[in-house]
Image 1: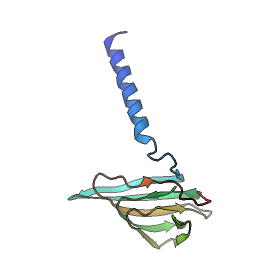
Image 2: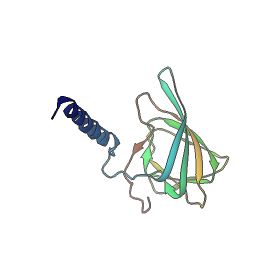
Image 3: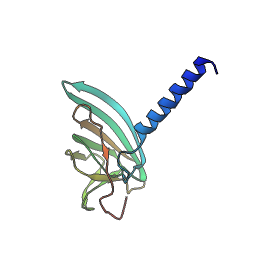
Image 4: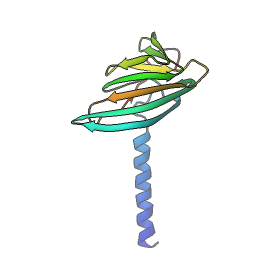
Length: 145
């Protein structure tokens, strides 16, 4: 086999393995989201603080999956209703269009769309530099996802 195809094959294999590691969940029992899509509207760092504005849409019946954030976030529901549950399996808020929601760091929770229309949430994340926007967590023992 000529040298160039071997090098291309080796690079492709290495990149594929790296991509698989990058997208693999960090927690074996993490609860993935379903029916969720997000678009980044703004991503800018001031000093050591990144500010990321995203529009998150959860389809009817969908959820974010259990997760936490390393920083704080502030959001506004622009369409639909967001049902929010904490790690004790209790509702900690129901947010309708026009209402705001804030979350502190290291707070395990899940957001769900129990309605019949898509829920849209504009969220401003202020996480520590180098940290992900969210960290997947296992279900804390609730009988719903």
